[in-house]
Image (cartoon, rainbow, N blue to C red; front, side, top):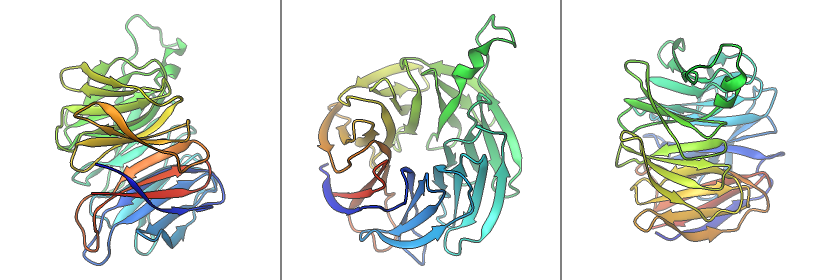
Length: 321
């Protein structure tokens, strides 16, 4: 795989762009790129031109995360205002507003079947699960306290949950914390299984391999990208190359590569057979908060696409074959 720069949208938002994901194609339209920004807006873009399709307002503070339902019909945005707004992608009609206590809404992701929305719970040291039929909170997956700690201990503040990822079959959920630990849960039993160790600083992004439900990738402020056997609790590979915090990681749809975005202002492409960075893209002039591969399929989609977003307010779009 080799990336080629296709298009950049400068000043895509009025402030830093903190989040990006692809809304899957439907029968009526191709996949759209969804971005969220410190400017409090969510925008939908048409690939490959990066033409603006729609602007969504409704948050009163910066947008930290966006998520798309696998059907491509609905999406969600999470903000520093502690609200998650669920909306119809094609009409922007509000479907639900989910409220949380302050600093308890961070990254989020719909499960592969689209029945549950998982929200990284920040200071609650948990992941909240919302039913997408009723928009009721159905479970709170809590990270257990370290053995021997007292309820008054401040240790739970280190378990501030930043990131979340579903495995491809939806039976496992992983979350990344401020202290560098990754926690894995059995979703059906709402049961904590184990920690994955190895990072020494915040884990801001996680993604499972789309082709192997055991394999989990993580990116951390410690500049490293890790590859875990999430069932066997083992670190399979540690990949280095970024010179600053690694803020985002995503896996290619065919599972052969991952992309990362970093505070070092670069996007890197990693070949998993070599477990090494094979390409560095320097399109951005500030830290890269989000990278996202377009899912396969859908009408009008020619070739693979990767998008990146940055504090420099821009979006970059890359092609690959």
